[in-house]
Amino acid sequence: MKTIVALVDRNRKLFFRDKGMLLTSLITPIILVVLYATFLAKTYKDSFLSALPDTVHIPDELINGTVAGQLAAALLAVSCVTVTFCVNLTMIQDRVNGARKDFNVSPVKKSAIYLSYFFSTVWSSLMVNGLTLILCLGYIYKMGWYLSATDVVWVIVDEILLVLFGSTLSSIICYPLKTQGQLSAVGTIVSAGYGFVCGAYMPISNFGEGLQKGLSYLPGTYGTSLIKNHMLHGAFGEMAAEGFPEEVVDTLKSALDCSPVFRGQVVTEHQMVIIMLASIVIFGMIYLLITNIPERG
Image: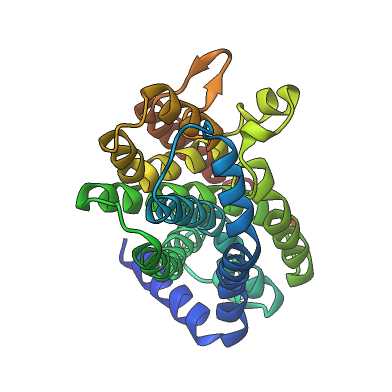
């Protein structure tokens, strides 16, 4: 255990010492913040208003708070996963600069080496996304704050689950890569595509029926829905307190992917948590399995 802790600390220091790696990991949240604030905010607001009946009037502050919560949830849902691919550059760099050869001839077990990569990815990603969460909460506070302390705690739990999910997924995908160019290519593909397939850039409810069914089998869909539920819980509660019909609130929840459907059944928040935990465990077992396969060369 001491060896793993020492290696995790070493990987963490390498990551934060390398300004290029740190900047790369921060680029995704920064770009998403600018993208959401300048372009998607109006799109989200128009989509939100279009889901409301003409007879329903909603205060501007509640509209802005709801849109801000949706934007923050989408940003964190993407960032928590894509940042882990940037952090995993340490694994690739060790192969490129020959550090792995030194590890291979040392008494350090192979399992300890790869567990240290995983735990350092989780730790560094949590630090980067923790800063992103603070920025998101500040943005929500400015636009319209409806979150309770319990909601914030749940959002933090959601963020941890998404980082663990992203860390196991990125560790599996990054394991066979040999160069930084390969990881950069994979990271670009993930950054560009993950936001769409998880429903962050555009609610899955806006997609075609066939695509909705296909995406319902991806665990990332429920991670995004989970954080949206907790980010918007206070706003939906305020709508109910304002006297909004229950049908209208339910329609908004469905439109914003807060009530995902799997094979005709609405998935509850507890079921989403179970899905995420199960995915983390399964991906973690796959990672442990492939890292125990003898390496060539």
